[in-house]
Image 1: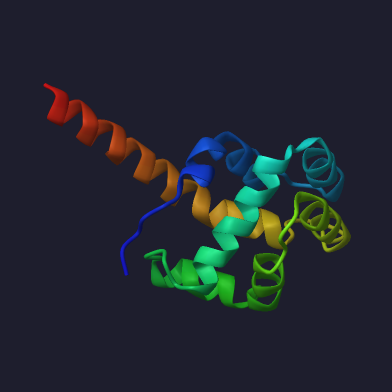
Image 2: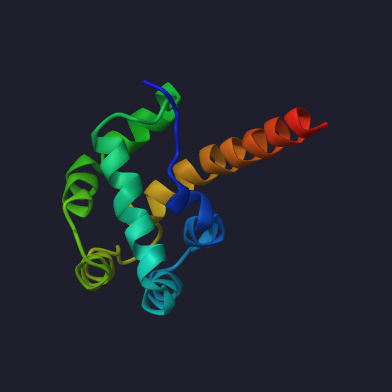
Amino acid sequence: MSAVIGERPIRNLDFVRALARCKSKKATRQLLNSANADQLLCLVEICVNLVKDRYLLPTGARRRLQRHSTHIKTLSRKRSDRATRSWCIANAPQRGRGSPAVVAAILAPLIADYVIKKISNNAATNN
């Protein structure tokens, strides 16, 4: 499969990175409470693409995500920002990183690399 990343994760790259950097449940909860609909649905889109195996992930990243496969599948089935927000907040861990943060932490570098390559390819073709 190709590593094509949709427009929504690219638009919300800063949100995904911020979520990946959250170290506490309180910070994660605050970020999710202040997120807009597009940012929350970005998490759903990422999970859908993970479930459908559309991302080329390194073996280590794939292993780390296997522990969270139930959460990823559940999040991929959410269809509204309200349901996504309530589920993410309810399933944040007591300490450390929760499922949305784990997904964001693993995929933020992949999305960033994709965006950088896309921008550099566009710059090379325009010159």
